[in-house]
Image (cartoon, rainbow, N blue to C red; front, side, top):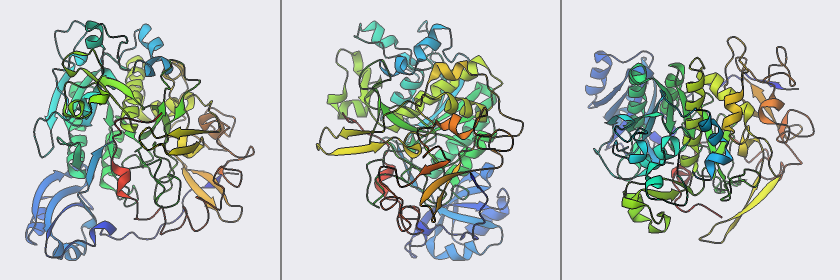
Length: 547
């Protein structure tokens, strides 16, 4: 029997825990959320406390400010203030992948993303990238390129690579007569490049939020229906308080499908959880589509594909949201490089024979996310009436659910081995299948969403169960039940549940309840689900990947 959601939470503090240790003699960069969209009156209250307005964020009732740390408690006492958090740092997190996902079938039938705008929030995306030109090579499909970073145009290369996976047409590989055509998932989609990361692939909450706000503003002008965020940072508070999560929810509610990289913390055992609870923000938000990384094993079939051991696993810290939502190829993916800083820094990852640094190989969930963004663009090209929730639901339901029980990966540098279990917190609803998603015609019941469920630990039987929001389509035993269109077994498959019940974890799992899932481990307030999420999870870029 499914457990009902709706536990009553204690009143949250107004100051984020990672801000309380700030040096009282220094200024701090913060994001302040008010009960209403801040006005000049609110700004002046902070200015009178020695602060300065850096960026307005009225769409999430917030503003970015610089403020003396000694005045934080005083500001938190303001009755109009709901929450104060640091302006935290954020980091950047195909020839085999396309046929493995059956995206080549979609392209043969004319589904190539034409007319769909995709906002890529990343490092700089050059309009001059040849693979992002139209088929005739006469105009760029990068129709807008704006910067919200502290530095202007840079040549880091992460944004080039992400955009190439998503929408590259492979023209440079064809021209150079390379042994493979490095074509993306939606090779005729329109790209809106919103630069939120600097020349080192780093940014802050406020720069990312500014990019999200701009994408919402440009939605009508460029028909932006998809947003790709191949970036992340550690989770410090509930998604209901996290300013990044609040921003992506506004984009979702504006009709934009938001796709986020899960993070690369799957090997992190700092807290004794075998890499579980390492999903990064804003991938911890239940609305968005959070993507983990698979390995294609350099074959065009998916039957031998395996999970990348570095792919972050859920449930999410603090809220215990079931993530990732699905997985897609992300290991050793070849895409645009444009002679970038990354291309020059890692010569072993350069694709020989490509002219002017055209292509390179990168790994990470940063590379898996644009696979799903491209798939969403194809679905919206075929049916522009689809809502973000229906796109997410169809992608999850049609994801391939055939996996081994576990696999072992070897780090090519250290030789260290890592064992991965194929459970709901590792692979989500399964492996992206583009053609199956395009072919699906199921609809959501009126008023229902595709919010990811919450994992609930039962201290009596030591099992983990799924708890569904009353607004979610799946798991509604009254209207649908397990055997209906959006039942939990249909959406996630039967292999991730225990003994034919709704339990997603228990004694028979690989790690057992006495390891990662014991009462004093993952589900304890001060353990993996608290504020001690290790910063090493936030780096969302792997250059060489794994074997």
